[in-house]
Image (cartoon, rainbow, N blue to C red; front, side, top):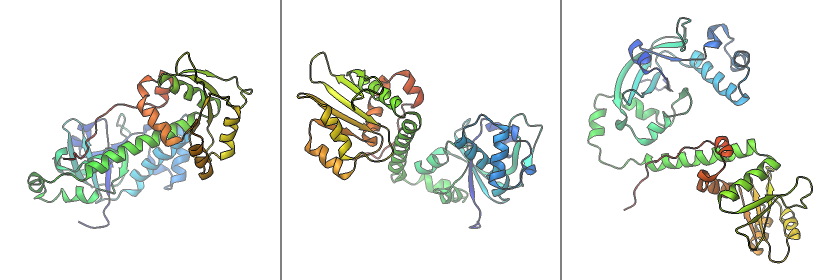
Length: 329
């Protein structure tokens, strides 16, 4: 196999089309014939924006990038990995044609011919390889585990897998990648959707999910206190300050919360970012004030997710799943 051949991954909602017609294809039928677009990414972005004017900026870049790669970066002789859902197999093929525009196709107009070389059960591959081709994107480059998929084309590959009784070392790495990507998703959605007063309302809802009774201070006249919380009808009172700024919180900002507290009060400072070194030292020396940074906030969101208001569960859509981990004996 030539070292300059690339490996691509692709998903579809029409497994039979790929397997019976010996093609790979992507949609976006409003784009028309991609050959009519100047072969550069910026031109593809401009045409995509015209065709799908309601799309968000980030999705425009992602989708236009996939279309450009499919039409211009893929070369005859490149390999393609296609996970089919109807039979839970990994299909590996070789690209046999340049880009083809098929206006008669109902959805998947953008096509390329492919020769399927091997169809293997998913169990033949490491968990890391399966995770990589499980990308959320429709069309993507396979990089980390390309060698494993290419090795699968060897005639003795199946036998090697059958006799291999060693632990799959990619399981732990894959589990960690899933966890980290989930954490990244949560903090990005909070940062993108919740600024200022909106973040205050979310923190109040999270505290309610944790079993606290909360009152949000009137906007503009709170003397530095955004939320007042009680665990029950009795003291202590917890005064909460919330900051959505991107920069780290300074010591003086936390001191302003301390200045608003009365004897017997406790303080809670919540930020999506983190704290400066001096601010951390101040928190360590002031045990009646608890500081929560972005990472700790994500931990609380995951722990109390099911008790959040529907509004916020829709904003941060998550699904409970089980993932494999390495067992420790």
